[in-house]
Length: 88
Image (cartoon, rainbow, N blue to C red; front, side):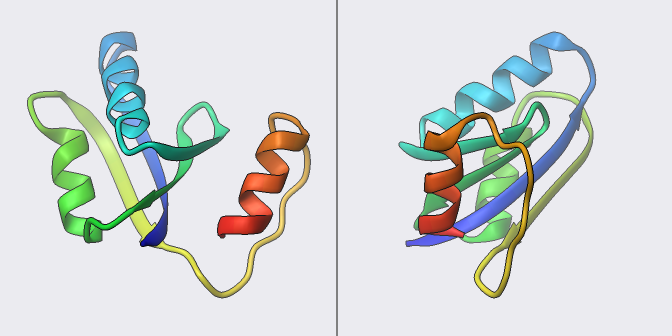
């Protein structure tokens, strides 16, 4: 299982909601901020991108596999911070 960081700029609120719902179907996820999430999946980066953009309009989607180093400040709470420490 790999951890990916996904950033996106949806076109409209409906597209944003659809992307978030699709990220949640992966099971293990952590919102970093409104348009940036970390997810655990067996998919490749391209498969994940294709899942997220299917039938919606987004001006930008970026999927990168994590694994070397990360730093942050002010996550959405201690639970999210722990998730990121354990999975990024």
